[in-house]
Amino acid sequence: MKKISKSTEPEKLTQYRQLNPTNEWKRCHRNKDCRVQIQDQLKLDQGGLCAYCEIDLKPANGEDAADLRVEHFHPKKIDASTQHNWHLDWQNLLACCHGGSRSDIVDSTSRYTSPDHSCDVPKADNDWGNVILNPLHLPAFPCLFKFNRADGSISVNVTHCQQAGVDEGKAQATIDNLRLNAKRLRDLRKPVLDELNEQLQKMVLTGYTAEEAGIRLTKAVLKKDDQGNWPAFFSAIRSYLGRAAEQQLNTINYKG
Image 1: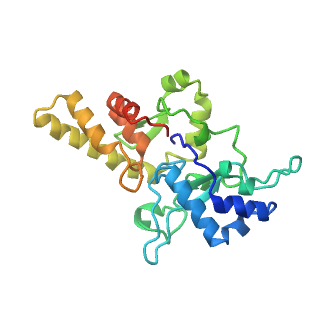
Image 2: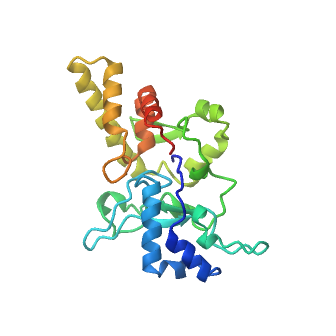
Image 3: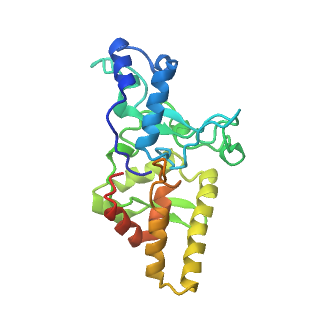
């Protein structure tokens, strides 16, 4: 999980809520223009990555459905005391993958692993606001998680949590409750880290020092593409490249 910086609320959502202040999300979802604008803006804000596991959010392709849906961090409901409608609250909306739960999505061979689920699937309608981290409230620096190239697993970077004043127990609960160490995710992360390691080794063999190789590789991979997307498993790449990654992110004024 990485920090997400939200943009201004999409115009169509503002208009829809003004006309339908008590509508539930399922009714808003039926409004195609509104739904598409929301999804597009969420994907842009998140650099094309799932808000929880950081897999790339892939669009539909032919008969295969998109691996993208709108997640509500706070459960979808209208608060009884304040009448606040969490269904239509822009700050409550995130873009997520399907967490391994759908067989009809793109790249289903690796992405459909039911019942091995993650992200918002185990979260469901649980109110975990005081249990897990909210990606909107994370610091941009430092990276709160670390990754093991041997098996693609994620764990808490205790030192970085302490530096950022983030509850390390809550960070661990984020991994556990969202099942960010699901086998599907470990199997998808490991090749990404192995490829980085292979590229670094090749660069060193051509005469670069390990530090020079790390800097050059970081500049090549830790950036957005032409569509504004970060590389999949951004935090794993960032963690693996270490100091060079932090220098690069500072250079490009990374905000999330």
